[in-house]
Amino acid sequence: VWLAVVLVGVKAYYLGLPVRTVTAWRDYLRDLMAITYVDLLFAVVIWAICRIVVALVDGHPLVSRIFSTTLLLLSGFCCLYAVAGVVIFWIFGGFLTYPLLTLIGDVRMIRSSVGAYLTGGVVAGLIAVPLCYMALALGTARWRAIAARSFLRPVLGAAAVLWILSGQAVYNAEWLTRSDRRVAENAHWVLVRSWWRSVTGGGTVQIGDSVR
Image (cartoon, rainbow, N blue to C red; front, side, top):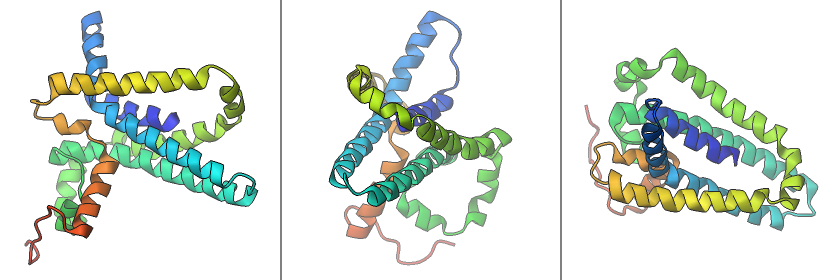
């Protein structure tokens, strides 16, 4: 839940705050759903996979603790990369891909471009967002038994499904022709998918020499 909240919150930061009118807030919510439904789906898929793993390691306390710690650290990194992804989108107009990462090769090549966006607020976000996520995840872990016996879990599940379906509908209706439509992608999945395509050679143009 907290991972989904962070991913949606980062995209909300990208949109900024709307004018204080009911119509503006309604349009803002529609835009937010449109650019975050894939992020929410990403969080739901991670949750489903982890539930399966937890069921498999049930009865092995040491393995469960190792898995929980690993998951917490990976999710914290996902929060960090979500913030970095917005900065990368501001610079390149798209999220980082593996071919672009290999093409850059040297951070000094883009130091001036990146430096212009690394404001104090952005740096604070890169540090504070993953730390806040891990603090919330650890602090609310004791609530899981209560949530399992209450109406909270089905309500959150229904809200997630409604958000994903509504977001996809709004994106298809209003965002397909926008120049910044690629912000609706999930930064993590974009990088993993591009890496896999590069490894398998599917649809990737290879450059025979280094770019100077």
